[in-house]
Image (cartoon, rainbow, N blue to C red; front, side, top):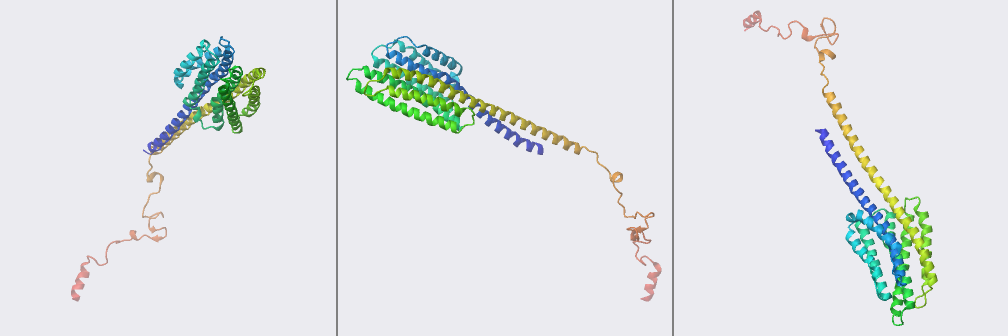
Length: 368
């Protein structure tokens, strides 16, 4: 019964630990899948920026970068879309991307069509962030990295693209259209600056609070390159003036290279950190099972030892102990306590003097 009373709370504690570990492991796996999907989705943002710029210049052919990025997202959605709940959203977005080359009209219509597609792409980033629970991670460096990867980077690239294209559109627009385009361009400049500042803060916070040996050094150089690309694009844009087309073209190339390098670092570090978390979860699971098996082994050994003691043959006092006697050990038993006479061995012990003596009764009668 005592063994059962010990076993029940031990088993309950083990099941609790195992349940918590399983939940943590499932959460890590889900977030890992989110990172995998985001890694495939990230190149689509810059590919759509390229498509927007080329379409505004009158190019009808779909850029190869869009075709390749779409194929990568389609492949990963086929594997993870049901788990992450993205299949329906991606199917709609993919359909709109496929119809971009057929958009007709002026520059405003082409820009509007691309703006709708890029907005839906940013919404897909947000949906992935939420459904994969990346925004619920408690580890500081991972939280800052996911914020940078799912919010700041896509927004910075999208608004930088719009900033450049709006500047070119304003330069070639009719006089009546210029004020609205200039206002939209100024808004894009502000949004770029806000996104880049938030990106810088989050990446610096991740580098300052991480256990990764490679994160800090990798982020600093690539973040500086990305910021220089954004600054070059800003210099090429002249709000309410004429943009520098050559400067914008150079800035786009610099920005694209910096974006690719920075994205690879961010997503690569996230993958490594999640791999470490999964290894830690697996180790704790093995450790819990090991401790539970050890506890069972110790209880089984205790039961076996207890039964062994209970089954030992009982001994008699005549075999292993001394016989208890009121007689002395001194030879004939005539002494008590070794030297003193034993009062229980004396003659006439228990007989009162004169009790039952006939002559004594007769003398008593004569006296009366």
